[in-house]
Image (cartoon, rainbow, N blue to C red; front, side, top):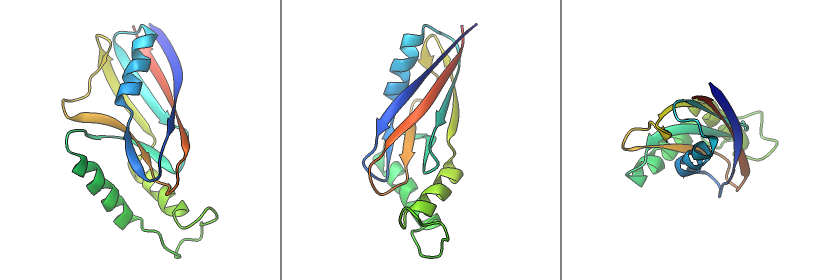
Length: 138
């Protein structure tokens, strides 16, 4: 049984979904662990992680629009010290979550044909985000 831990640093360009599947797979390739479970943890409260369709970009646009309607920018929030997108970003992060678990075998992530791992940036401006990766297996 082996354990490997590392970090991904992702530069975002404002509110968007960034496909990090390739970065995650490249990191996993370097661990030498062939079969097991990978945990991804986003170290931020205004960004999140999710698995979604990777074939049609309209899926990502529709998801972001739905989240914007569900947690719109507004002056109704008490917490707004970093701007009008501050509290909506926290709400979106809570809704999508910040932790994923993905199985892998033969050194490959066991994502479905149309699945990708996304870092979801919920703030209006760009940020440097960090995701902690922990692989456990053999």
